[in-house]
Each structure stands twice: as C-alpha cells, then as structure tokens.
Amino acid sequence: MDSTQQPATQVVVELSGCSAHDAHAVFRVLGRSFASDRTDDDVPHDAAGGRPTVWTSTIDVAELRAEAEPMHLTAPVMAAVQGGYWAVDRLRDVLAAAFAVEDEGMAAGDQEKEVELRLASR
Image 1 (cartoon, rainbow, N blue to C red):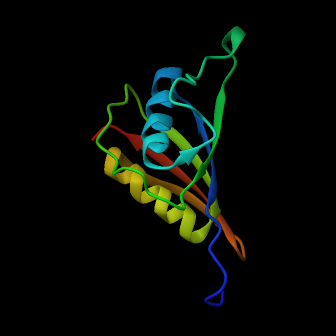
Image 2 (tube, helix red, strand yellow):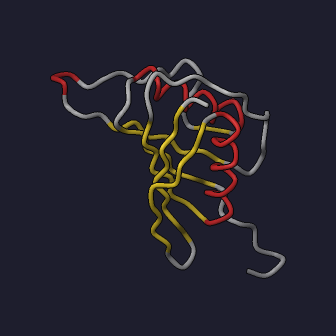
C-alpha cells in the first residue's frame, strides 16, 4: 500500500452462541466506539422456534468516537470478525478494552482476514 491509499475501514461482525442481551451488549460497545449500521435502540431478538441465531453488524473503524469501557456478559460470546488487517486489529483492541478476548482461530487472505474471538466478562 502506498501513502495515497487508505486502509479498508469496514469490518463485518457476526455474533453467535449467545443471548440477545449479550449480543446487544457487544453491539453497544462497538456502536459507542465506532460508526455502525445498528442504532443503540436496535436490540437483537432471538429467532422463533429455538433455532440458532447469528446477529450481524457492519462497523466502520475509521474514527474512534469513544474509548470502550468494561461491559458485563452473562455468558461467553463467539464473534467472527472479517475485514482488512488494520481494521480487524483496531476493532479487536476495542473489544479487548471491554471484554476478556481469546483468539479462537484466524483465516488470512491477501488483503483481508477473519478472526474468531471468544468474548467474556473480565
């Protein structure tokens, strides 16, 4: 990348294996720190019939609006995070300020990577 190119700033976040309450807590942290396609009152809801639910949001990490503060989760949350290397790392840093974060896996490409993160309360 030369000095005239800007890094990709959009990251797709998918949350699974958690309650709607915990998904909302993660999205609130991200939405307060960065621009998001979810509003603060966009509360996730469980799917009917007890089927597994995956919640998705696109986060733009170009500008940090506020530092993340620790947030309580009732149980661990699995987060799949996909985007450019710089953007994914920046988003992970914000998550690490709010939660205990464990790397569960990574797939890397030329310009993007996907990481699997396990988020829990500190």
